Figure 1 (tube, rainbow, N blue to C red):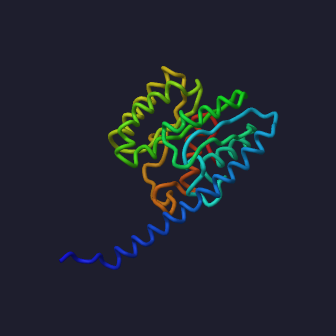
Figure 2 (tube, rainbow, N blue to C red):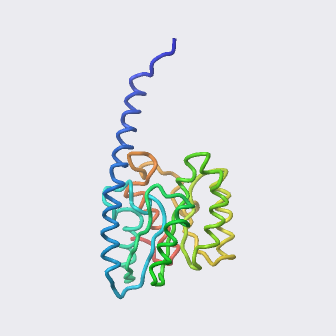
Figure 3 (cartoon, one colour):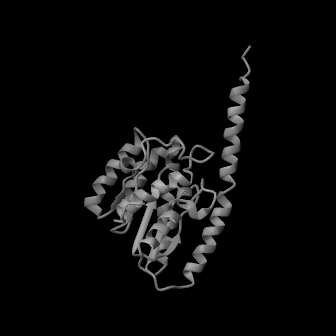
Length: 225
């Protein structure tokens, strides 16, 4: 007769599930906040345009406030450095690589305005299931071919397999396609303890600060104080 899981196991599982629900409950409010922000940006302005492409990490999911994700924190860093952008966040929670090409890049192209800065962080959701990983490399190769020259793109973590292959392709694209790497694998933390949200998947505010630091380094901002 199988043994029932012990109390410690059940308590740990309950805490994890509460954490997952807590973070999932941020998805809609964060998306709505960015949509409102985007509407204000599209109403006009003279500043150069910064367009963000990506998934829930670009939405700031895992941080209590949507502006405390890496995008919002990088925006603050840019402003402190005297670089004022109209920030348009086209990212979508749950997005995979294919979604950037099918939905987000067409939105960018429809803007009419030429962005001065484009940032991308995508691929984590392609790793969560085998059926997604199967096409991830081919989709990533295609994405690297269609991203505008000068796009700043972050690599994703993972110690073997597809993430490693994606990183190798990305490093080659720096020369071949004129892309800029925000090198999270080499310039980000080696240990994420204390840097993740309650779902143990998304970064928290401190984790997002480090991602903002990596993107800041890639675009030539001075080190954070």
